[in-house]
Length: 164
Image (tube, rainbow, N blue to C red; front, side):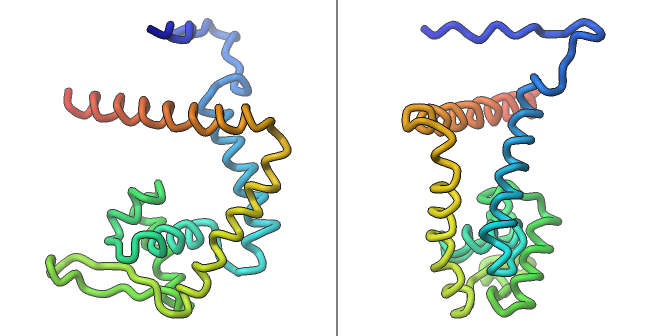
């Protein structure tokens, strides 16, 4: 069995270093990658990051409720709603009634949205190609595996704490 990482539970006053705190480092890395995406890849499409993520999710799954879209994109309801409104206004997405739930809504890509979605894979490939030289292949694989495990563990903690 694997030994858990020995992490000091409560750092003493003056010993806490934000730059060493894992959640901060993850957020900082994600922010840097997001800026790279926006500056070098999304600027030409005119899509904001939340719109790109929503377009990618709806394009992949075909039809999503806003709630499911939020789960698939790790965005809250407000961000999904704003991204959907922007995509609808640009003619890339339709939002219609859910036939199974009178109050529910469903998101679908339009033909124009499907065309834009077809560029999502190439954009994602360009982004990963720009980032990949920063790590060895072994580090890249380990990072993906570690992030998956960390996300799953954090989710299990959240589920466990909501049952208490």
